[in-house]
Image (tube, rainbow, N blue to C red; front, side):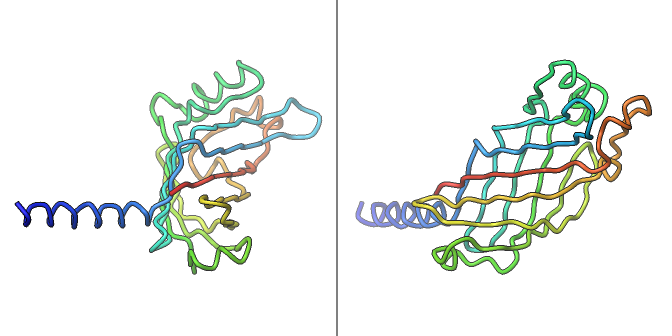
Length: 181
């Protein structure tokens, strides 16, 4: 009896230790914009991004359901899902990578600028990226923010000629993740 109680306590402690090394969210936010001056705004927001960060290794993974992007114009959202991103065929985008020179203890000194080396899979294509990020520790959260550009051609996302002049060649992507322990 004492031995099984001891084993149970050890397993519980190891599990708690493993859990405390990871920060996660299911309510992260990604906003992308591909607007061109003088034309209608091409901008969408997804507030249900899932992400997990291993604070021992700096490894991070994120998942975005592409149907979760919301546009101001419903028709634009429909075209995005059916014609461009083909969300029935490619329902999610994933990112897996590692934050370079990550040290959890350094975050107490204020915002830290890092580079995230990651593989982004979108529309069935994977591209290796170096993404600038800023990490900040607040209370019991880690806040990760980033702003970077993506080229739809890199992911075989074709924009029809009829609207090509109304959509930017590079898509500006803003990420905001509040990760909790």
